[in-house]
Image 1 (tube, rainbow, N blue to C red):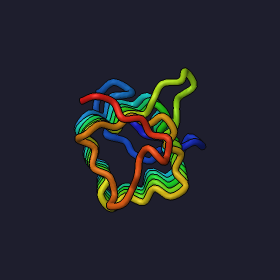
Image 2: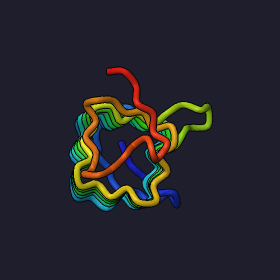
Image 3: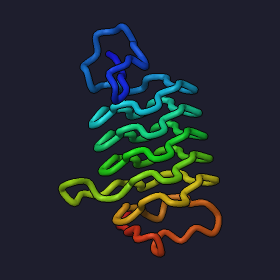
Length: 151
């Protein structure tokens, strides 16, 4: 199973027989994955802490319970991504797009931890969150167009 960037260059090769889009529980911490094409990939329970994911395509990616602490997600496409219970503490999301997907579906942040995350310039319109979502101190999700959903 391989991760390629938008120019086809291999950024990671696990050399195992997993399905093409199944990276469940993989350790990619600290890796340079700039401009990675990860559209629709399952990264549930994966360790992406301190990974460089600048300008990566994570459209419809499943990042359920993923560890994204201190990851660099500047200008990444996260439209429609499942980030439920993900740990995004200290992540850099400046300029990232978490807005609706092409079908109007929402990016999901229910139960996610965003303490210390940098969110300036991020598109957050229609992003779903709940009472368990932890935001940076002083951050008002509703003023950014985010939608609170029942837990």
